[in-house]
Image (cartoon, rainbow, N blue to C red):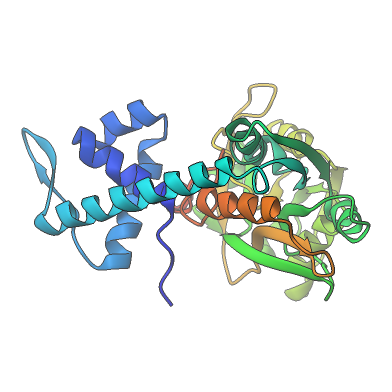
Length: 319
């Protein structure tokens, strides 16, 4: 099945074509070069075409098919922009109260661009963000206290509708001087006896320990915290390793020490990041417009505040 080409990926391609250089486009739109490269590679793979040729002295040049794709992308982006303008002109569509739940370990990355970026674009929207773990968010959906949640596919129940936007496989995080920092991959069997610092959130803790249980193993948990940053700091200071799915762009803990990501070998269940809604609650037009924004801003190729999957794969494999 073909993957979608997101509006965000089109924007990166158009910026690169306009500036003739990934590095220049990166500087102009404030997006990392690896993220732009991954977006272009995805479009080329999706369409089975070559968009650019590299000229030694002139940088990147569009191929003939690349020029045609550029025109179409510009048209789509223009139409998309017009959709928001039309929606903004409709007082019935883009005004009112929107209550968005956010899984707490995702909030620092997702909230500024996706959630509050929406309220900045539509000043008639009164936006309320509610942070919480999975249990809190599911309870608030059922109590009609939030309209939707940006969260994971953890223990939702048949009354919850979940739409996956991105796949986040688990990986191992260690301190810079940890012996495992020199490895490209590590197995659960090798990890089990090592000290584990567990991200101790309801349902999340069950997810991480289930990875070991499926392999008939028991992890050696030496410390716990419900705070992502506390876990990262403990890891950076050599207390143990941790398992994570989110991929922050920074490899530094809050106390300035460096962490290293190592690929977890084997077939391990990923976390699915997406949108959760309560089936019994009819979605308002405002909610549906916000969900469209989420679809445009969150994908396997781009998640605000995170390293792209393509860049992450190269990083942890050392290539």
